[in-house]
Structure formats: structure tokens, C-alpha cells
Amino acid sequence: MLLQFLFKFGFPWLGFRNATRMGDSEKMSSMYAVALPWFRATNKHQYARICIDFVWVLQTLNPIILKIYNRHRTCSLLGNTGYNVAWDQTCEFLNLDLKNLNPNSPTHIDKILLMLNDLKCCDENMRTSLGVERSDPSEYTAVKIHHIEAIVKALKSALGSTTEELFTDQVKESPFGGGPRPWNKVRNPDNLPGGANLTSQELEERNISWVISQLESTPFGH
Image 1 (cartoon, rainbow, N blue to C red):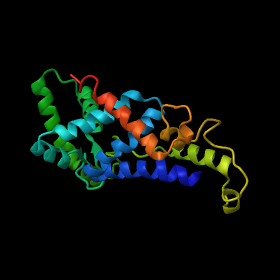
Image 2: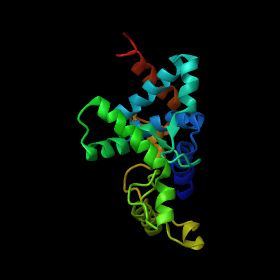
Image 3: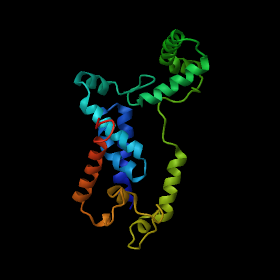
Image 4: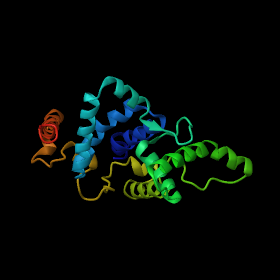
């Protein structure tokens, strides 16, 4: 069960986070196909639809614009390689800084943004030379340690923590409760009758049919 969780959820998500850090647009785009059934299985239907929207946009985007997009898809707030964040997070940080300075016009906003960007470039070096720690949010939001601890605690409680406990033949209680294992739910997100007995190809065909039905509706079908 632990290996199923790692290979079908944990490692793909870690790969996506690392791709964001490194600005690897190709790997980031590939994650939408992986995450789409996750969203369907957890009733996040709008997010599932966004996955389709995004792929559709990428396939129809002007090649020159797409090249620029792929190159500048993420950014580093301090210009450090390997610490990139998505642009929406960058905008949130800038919006917070702007609100604190109470701009009164679009022109004033432009001047403040220019000033903030200049200051951020020298902020870390200045603080280091003065012996002052940074108090602002870091440029990359790390995984919260208490979330990791909660997951590890649940897995240890249900599966054990030693080699003997983990690999015994005794049936273990699922740390995911009495419902289906998450990876089985992802294979059959619509809870089709007899879905557990369908072959992988049959389930794939059902998922493809769902995607096509979304593409045939608004805004794609009109």
C-alpha cells in the first residue's frame, strides 16, 4: 500500500513541485494529464475541467507565443536558479506589498512595482551584510512540516514502522478509511457499476469519453 501511494501519488506530485522550482515547462504540462483523474475522483470537477482547458489552450496557442510562455512560465523572486514559483504566487506577493504602500493611481502602482523589484534584488545581500534576518515570506513556499508529520503518523499507525510490520502477510487496516483505496478510486472516478472488474483499457476508454464530452460542451463546442 505504501509503494502504491508513493508511486501513484507521492512521487508524481514531488516531480511536479520540482518541475515548478526548475521552471521545467514540459514536465509541468505533463502533470495535467496525471492530475485530471485525481480531481474527478475527489469531486473537484472544475479543476478537472481546467486541466482540459489548459491542454486545449497549449495545443492552439501560436507557436511563437508558446515558446515565450514555456521559457518564462515560472519565475524566481530573487533570481536564484532552482527556486522558481508560479506567477500567481508572485502576483499574490506583489499585491500584498502594493496594498501595504496604498497606491493611488495606475502610474503610482507602476513606480512602486519598479521600486519593489529593485529592492528585492539587493534585499538579501543587504540584510546579510547588516546581520539582519529576512522577515518577508520566502520566495518558495515549502511543504508544511506538520502536514508531513500527520501523513507519516497515519501511515505508521496503520501499516507499522519496522520492516517486519510493513512486510508481514497480515492484512493491514487502510489509513484511508473504509472506502476504496485512492488509486482504485482514480481508476474508476465515476463509480461505474462493476468498475472494479473493468480492464485498464475499458476504464481508459471511459475516461476518454468523458474528456470528449467536456470538449463538446461550452466553450469548446460553440
